[in-house]
Length: 466
Image (cartoon, rainbow, N blue to C red):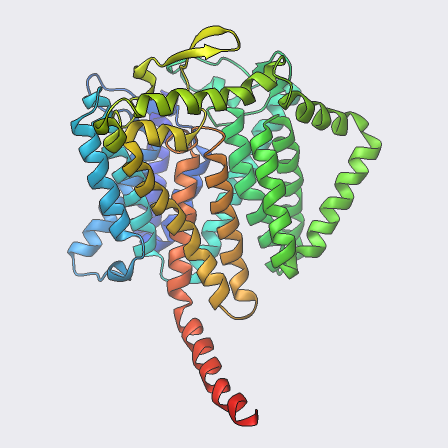
């Protein structure tokens, strides 16, 4: 019943926003819903694809989007979209992989899901966004959704209550998690509305740099205070996820921003000082981080075994792909890894690899080396659009592109740590950021052209003076 009510609320709100304020003004709420609502909010009709709240939300906005285009609306920049060819090639190749899949029905659903949930969502956002104000509102929506998630995370850690217990039990491949996630060596690990703590940590590694950017450009004291409260809650939650990958991704992101984002440096210095203060007053926090680092390289510990698992996973996966030219080309089909039943010796015993803790390895196994190269090129192209925009834009306007670039890099890094692409809300977040990057570069194109023109005018003058 809860899922039906939630679906009705989301659809009704989207319809109301489109009817009263227009399609573009509905996008921030769409993004807020995509990030906040768990993937376990679903209905499973017999013999059909799962009807998640995310899919229903995309279809709802998509209907209005297509209706507007059919009624004579013009596309904002489709012909110049830098990702369109790679997207088409990716869809084409995953379709080929599906034809030769060991689980054709599962692969077909996965191929359609990627095209509709990721690529269509991206296309919808890029084609609808017409002002930088909308991009700002979407940024606020992402940060706001993770702020709400962080509140749930605090309740999970300190009150032993998980918001996921409100939703119906959903049987996954590895069973059903009831209540907070408890690790034998790490204790309670917060996951909020995400399927796993590492996914929640990855989302926070996205949101914290974006929240710091909003602080840097904030014009009101109330908004600044609210953002700082949210940032501190997010830091608490990412620590409580007990996930090393997101910790490292966030540290690298903030270090990168400290070098290139001058307007954020004072905020980062404040965070560094606050972190040092916490280490001095709560030595257990620093001790926990040190213990996690040391345990990572101790193969006899559970945490160390988790780290070593990835190397064994790569080895057994390469062996599986190299069984024939066909598997090297198109793999075993999208979402087929869990049906392969790969086995190899791990820590002295024969072990069956039931999970794939790396999206890059999973893509290699399921779509072959060609699919891995195509999807890798697509994702990296989506990331570097924002870097090009950062390099070309003049003044502080380029800082948002820098933050979006950092988000994209963090996601690609985390893809080596966990199957983050296609699991949970994180994949939606990547394509939302990609759409923001492309739309922002397009909207700022006149400024880029003006900066280039000014540079070309200066060069002849400098040549004459020399």
